[in-house]
Image (tube, rainbow over all chains, first blue to last red; front, side):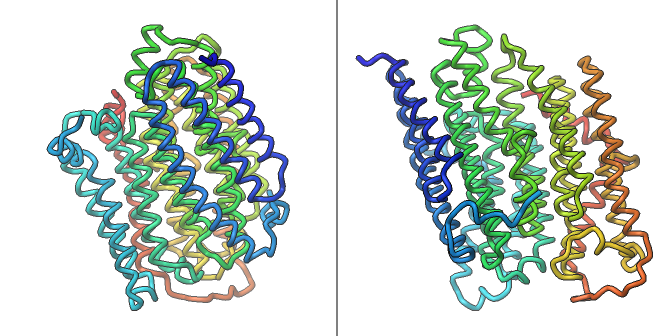
Length: 100
Length: 486
């Protein structure tokens, strides 16, 4: 059996990649993909803990998270499309009308 | 397993949520007919009836014994009922003040009310949840609704930008929250708050590191929704870009739901940590109050001023979280109720002025307002005095309760900083009142001279609530404090 720490490490690395993607990418769709990566890393660590604890709840939570992630994508892409209509661009740098 | 009969029985405790969802669906189905699409009359009518019915259902639920529903996913107790009432009042007033404001901006008006009802349903689910995965689901239900509501005026660039910012940062914070949940699950083997409380108090946690890590990540997620400093950067932008009624709704409803979760998670499930947890909360409270107030001093736009003032108010409420006593949590419930009335009132007046003068929310556009519209001007003065914390308004009693809970718990310095902050806050609230009662020589261009009756009703409800909770606070404060014994 793979030790728990390996799986947690992998999930932490994925989560960090997601965070870095959100912080440094300029394309809103890529930012959105990075957020999905963060959610999926949480899924991975849910499953890892579930296996380690011998408790199935964690695997069920993953389904909840998947549903939420799908709903979020639907709303998110709609908002990004609307942004494209208004700004003719999906770069996060263009969203600079509101400051201070 | 849960039997059909049990399921029905449990649904009763869940009635306000169900009523709101069903009314939302009725709006959605009914507005398919083109004749009803034109004005928001159909949507707002159904929404008002649904909200009133949900309030009415609370009357039956109030007597019920506290019990867990749906296999310990939700709970019905006085704490959740109190906050449900707060959220429903907020929803009702927001629907009333939205009537004229939204139609003008060319938004999909019936859908607007539907989303409002679904978001409120999500908030009610959140205050009733006693399982962290349900908290996450509820958080997403109302957040998804609000992301759309912020950007519902599709042609406006600022609105689109605000919704994009809120979406990206909100989803980012939700991911932190979820990642925190996995570690709490790893440490305790469950996400049920009551079981977590038991495991933590008996010291059966598999790894304290996981628990602290999880709790910190969950703190980040909730602090984002409450807009605590340093998680507040989105607040002014989103509040300014959103349609004004939605700004009011976010400031009030989201705060109520998020504080409820905060009390349930950090007040009851995870009360003791080895690390200096309270020092951390202390620092957050001080930062939130101070940064909110100082930034509010520099604002010209009234909406932005109220956005920063809402950050400062989150800081005041957080003082009672630091105190952490039953009296303190009761004070939070009371504060949230008062804040609902006074803040919605203030935003209601802003909506009124926007209807009157077009999209202007500069403080200067209020010049001479107190003479031209004496009644509304006086209302605004009362709401601002309440936000400032002057007697005989609700804001005074609420602030007094929050600060006295902190004194009782021995946080004298925190209260001193809080009172100093209130003095700073008085400056910018008074500035608005002074501008309102300064005579202006230039004639103001009025777009629509008549105010809406719905807006008026919304203001009357807010005014009545603000004054009543200030003059006769004992009964409600007592109910709030009793409600907290979870």
